[in-house]
Amino acid sequence: MFQDAYGPSSGPLEVIQLQQQVQELNAEMSAYSTTDPHCTPSEKYVAVDVDGSDVIIALCTPLMKRVHRYVKHSAELVFMDAADNMDRHNMRVFLLMIYSVAGGLPLGVIITTNEQTATIIRALQLYNTLLDSFSFYKRGTDGPMLFMADDSAAERNALHTVYPKSTLLLCIFHTLQAFWRFLWDSNSAVVKSNRLYLFRLLKRMMYADTEDTLTMQYQELASDSVVLANPRIHGHLQSLYDRRVEWAMCCRHDLPVRDNNTNNYCERAMHDLKDNIVYRTKAFNVPQLVDFITRRFEAFYQRRLQDVANNRLDYVCNSRFVPTASNIDVSLIKPTSSMQYEVPSEKLSRVVYTVNMFLGTCTCPSGNTGGLVGHANISR
Image (cartoon, rainbow, N blue to C red):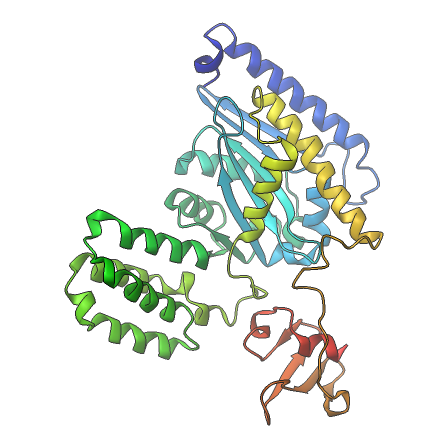
């Protein structure tokens, strides 16, 4: 890989430079991580694996490790996304993110030469060597309960191999986007006037309230004349239905997604990385890209958290986590236990929801997965 960009003689030199840089970064980060009681003197924050033309780099900086250890959401849902074209070698950069009231927070960064399944598996295994039993909020290398990523077979196979105890979900936005592109593909042979109609059929299934409703809608779809007229569409929709637990909203009611159904946190972080870290220019080489991530990327999120801690909330003022005003009569709220309340609906008469403050859940449609809702805010 290095030889292609610099010539045969300079490749080994850059590998040596990268390995030296990793040693220096580990020593430097260990020096200012002593305030964390879980840190050990021999703890590693950057690891590199070079095998012929394949180069894999895993990073879990001190800030990322603190997110692992002290933010409980790191045990629930982790977003994963990849991007390239950030350096002259066209290395792939994978981000592992979680959500928080301060926006997305990073759990790790992986840099690889390609996006093949075997390479991503090696990268995730290398990343696990940087973790300990307190990672993923005390789940360790078992990983989080849920991963949400794009419909990339290589990524999903790698995640399933390294984290078999985690459930893999699909981003609903990218699922709909991929189906829309499929409808416009000339090989699909879909009549232009039918594209929007077919798209709405899948979207209706995605937002079905219950699994029974989803099944009924699929049965109607399977017998639809427009679908039956195109075997490609019929086969594609059948394959999507077989994977409904990955993308259907009704299949997530018992999962701690906290009302997160897209991996927009990763998308936003990628924009920050490209716009605010590398300034829409390519890094000169891989060591420089690693330097940008360990220094600039780390400092970027440090400043964001400092702003929140110092009540400089310009960034989060428009966040959906900010409580909104409610017209619910407080006198109508009935406590059923020390951490559980019955709260009337603000819009529907004679409808009462149960709010569990310990679990952070509500029985309303948005709160049954742990999403932030007004019923929980007013119960405080």
